Amino acid sequence: MVQGRTGTGSVVPLMVRVPEDLRDRIKAAADTNGRSQNSEIVATLEEKYPAPVSAMPDLAEIYRLMDRVHEAAPDEDEQDRRLVDANQLLTKAGAPIILRFSTERDVWGNREIYMSRVKAQK
Image (cartoon, rainbow, N blue to C red):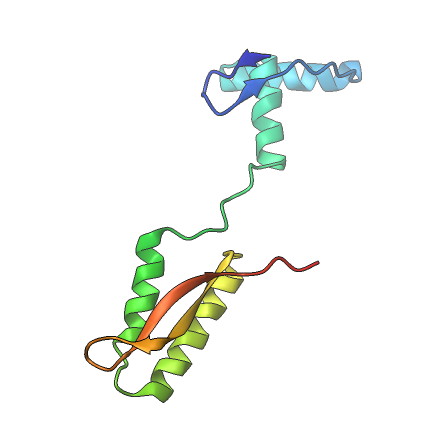
């Protein structure tokens, strides 16, 4: 295997047979876009089959959600509502974690919030 030019992974050869008129359209598009036929095909395939996006939000976003829940203290009912909202956002984003309240309290008597891995569903 050959290392890809973008450094995103290995490049492997792929033999594809296409009708002549399709090859001509690929060549015309490649000429218009100023690239090789191979690069044109790869760009088209990347559009059709994009790389999967990480389902994990960045830590700054997770901490922002945790802060929003924590800021509702000492109103624990509001904290509960905000925790549900935060977990709905994480679930919608496909994140493999949820936020939970610990049974422990911080030094000010507030509930502590932590991240927990979501169990894989079968």
